[in-house]
Structures are given as C-alpha cells and as structure tokens.
Length: 266
Image (spheres, rainbow, N blue to C red):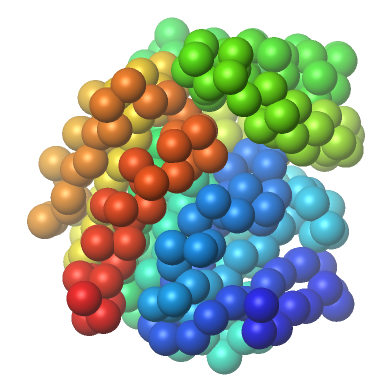
C-alpha cells in the first residue's frame, strides 16, 4: 500500500505504480472485496480501491443516493489522488457506477471493465429485486443475506469454504440498516438509466459475468457487449456472482490480460 486516506467522506487506498486502475465494489460490500485481485494487479498498475458512500468506512450519502452521486464520488477521489485518467473496473452495482462514470466523464476514462453487473432487467427481474428491497426496509441487511449467498456462490463453494461465506455474510450484515435499503434501491432501479448511451463508449471495454450468475446473466452481458463498440465478452464457466472470490484466477487472468492490453503494459 502506497497511500491511504480517510479524511472527508470517502475512505480509500492506493497501491502499486503504473497506469491507474480504479476498482468499484458491489452493493453491501466494501473495498476489501478486491483482496483477491490486488496481488494480480498491483505488480502492473497503480490501483485505487475505496468504500462507496454508505459502505465500509465511508460516510453515508448526504442526500438521496443515485448513480450520479456515486460517479461523482469516484471523480472526486481521482482528483484528490492526482489521477487524470484511469481504467475503471466495477463489480455489480460498481459496474453500474462504472457505466455512469463512462457516460458522465469519458475524458477521464482509459478503459472500462464491467463485472457481473445487471443490464436492462425485464419487469419480472426488476420486481424480484424490488421485493428484496422491501424486505430489507423491514428487517435490515440480514433479511435476505442467505438467499444472496446462494445466488452468489456455487453449492460446492458454500460447502467447502464456510470461512469465505461467513466473511461475506459479516460484511453484508454490518451495513447500517437505515442506509442499506436506500442504496439497494439504486441497484434495483439504476440499470434502466444506463441502457441508452452505451454505444457512445469509445474506450476499450471488457464485459464479464459467470455462466450461472442468475441476476447478472450471460444474456445481459452479451447485450451490453453488443451495444459497446469493440467490447470483449467473457463468460466464466460454472461460476456465479462472486467468482472473483470463489475462483480468483478465473477472473484475474482475463481481467489482467485486458488491462495490460488496453493500458499498454502487455
């Protein structure tokens, strides 16, 4: 770790040296979720990880959370760290934020990686997520954590790696109940606002998901890749949502290869 900051609203860490890569974590998680990618990335890149507003050690949102707010948080952190342009890799909600950032600030983006992220949900798919939001409004983050872990990890992983499953469960259930459901609504609704405009993304782009990720399906990933000029699609066989924790090499190999090619370090 080279630099760390916690003053103000955002808690962040900057590792390594080389072309800049910003990593945007998923809903209910925190910057520690990138621990499985950092050993592969930091030998080649300067890597910025941070806690989204309302997550980890960062402050709660000051107003109604939306993708523009989270895009602005990333822009502010890049300014603070002296990063003029970065490759942005976002996971799940982070992938939605990365797309919002690509549309809002294309001049600050050198490459884009969209990992296990929803796109243009059907009415039934959106209603299912809205129902989970309603559950958390009543019962907090623990309301549907077990069903989330079933969607996120393969049965074999849940059996063979209980410590990993418990770690992710702790991250989720430690979220502030008053903030959690407000941000969950961004995950439920925000994908609809970033369907239009993907054809304007002009930087190298990678779209990745798991073959068995039920909420961020290969069909969604394929549709995104078809809209973004020149995008590369990777579907990870036999893996679900949290492939980057369950099988880091499966994610790290294509992600690193893409970033090296896009940023000229191959």
